[in-house]
Image (tube, rainbow, N blue to C red; front, side, top):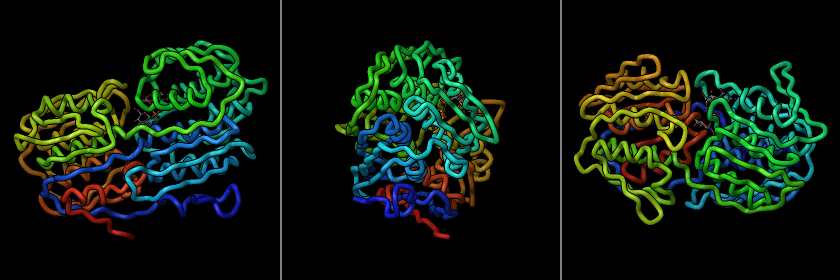
Length: 447
Ligand code: UD1
């Protein structure tokens, strides 16, 4: 058991991955991936689940916790508030780790700029804090450099539940001294984070809340299941209308974080792009169905196994197939860059349309430097498959863009060096080890 050593506010950094660092990854491309890859718990489920610990004075235990820099940031944010946090388990095991969080004594309800700027998901503490303590202050978020990414839907929803919102000096202050009151919140746009924030807040509001046009991502279902285990009353889980009956308090629970579908999809592409044969373990075909259908249409074999997914490339090459990103159950925006890497070497052309985020084609110029043929028109990219890519030094400014360059590097001739690996460390646990175990020639160059 690892506990912070100098009181509740000691940062956990020494026990978790660094959140900064300029390491690089070197890949000598051309090896076929073969073997098995264990999939970690989902980062995008873990972050809201950790924020949910703020809803109760009792202990929330999460298992299958991934070992990632974003988890460090969220753990440090909770510690800053006064939450007791301890983390258990080894860093290299297949079962992830366990985290115990007890928010019995909250000293502070301000999320400072230094922590929030590293990770946009910090905004997820707003709902739980204001619901339980009547106030919260969060620096306006940073995170990935993809588009403007406002938080108006989070704030508008909390206002509908009776909170008051003030913006000052780069901070947003949300107050509800008499508590929140259940109401009907209709989101004008589907938002994963706003749905999570409002669902958590509504659990402790007075009366019934209806969330209409809610997101339906598997991570939202996972959060709803955990909240239910804590004593929340949530109906319509998995649909776009959630009905939440507020309760006076929530209690202790233990919850296993669901597998990371974006990591699953990323390694599925890694197998396909190298013409390989890989089994992804501790995951579920249903989580990547939208990607799997497109890959199958292109001639890749993606099949469910007991406890995982098998990906093989019987024809040695994939055909170009169009995709358009959409809220779940559509094709995930978080797999768009990886899928584009696959399409760069496809037979024929494909049109990739991004509907969720503006400015999410930052990987395109780097892929082009590796020999890809891609033209962007507004929110669509036309990718004409080429016979070969060549290795190059590349860099990207967000998490999924960075990993798409790693994927291209796996198939490229020669050496690829991916700079700014800290983006990868935010979302991919032991990336080099997992790929190296399947025959990839890859190493981390420490700075
Ligand atoms: C989550 C994921 C992220 C993923 C995204 C979409 C986490 C921690 N992150 O991010 O990896 O790419 O879902 O699947 O789970 N929007 C507004 N106003 C708001 C909130 C969002 O206009 O208040 C817009 C965004 O700019 C974007 C769209 O809504 O265009 C969807 O964003 P949202 O679903 O909220 O993404 P996140 O929850 O931030």
